Length: 239
Image (cartoon, rainbow, N blue to C red; front, side, top):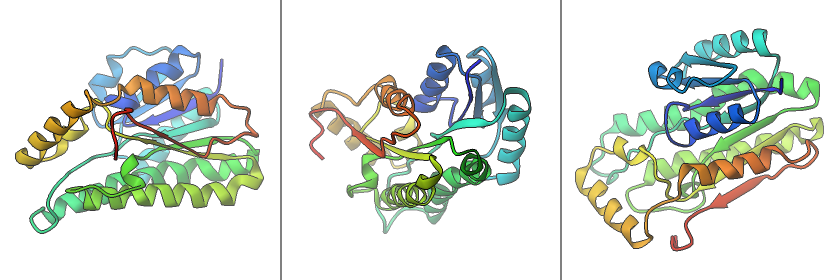
């Protein structure tokens, strides 16, 4: 059996397709999300599904340690959990800003804090953080969302540098628009309407599997090769 993979946000979108890909490739997988029935419904071989709040470190640690007791140490953590709540900064409810900061930033830190020390001691392991092209440039109605994704880029790159001598990889994947349920989190119907109209001009977003192909490529490089960052978007997406 291959090494253990942990995937957050595994009940939909990129996270779900990532878990399916690693399972298909022979890895035991820990799937983490709040929606347990969806994950269990995938019926992935050698998998454990846990309904966990990714911002709760104790819950995350319990799920990871249980999986390690069955399948061995985590070789790769893929942080896919995230929310996108678009809004005009002078109108948007503060709780939406607060939620994005919690899930998009703290959500990558909880799991990383649990697995990283052991990876450094073993001189192996990979952390893959799913960010966004919005972590590299700004967009209208994306102020705090962009801020959280800029943070993901900065945190990932800084940790990468500091654990590089221990042969541990930290990889950032930054997709453009992807056909997932992410936009549905936004509560402003006018913004969602305009966003969907714009998507028509680029003939829809990426498919989740196209992003997963990047994860697969980066992970399967030799351990001494780190693909530090991949930015992927539809060719017609200019920004």
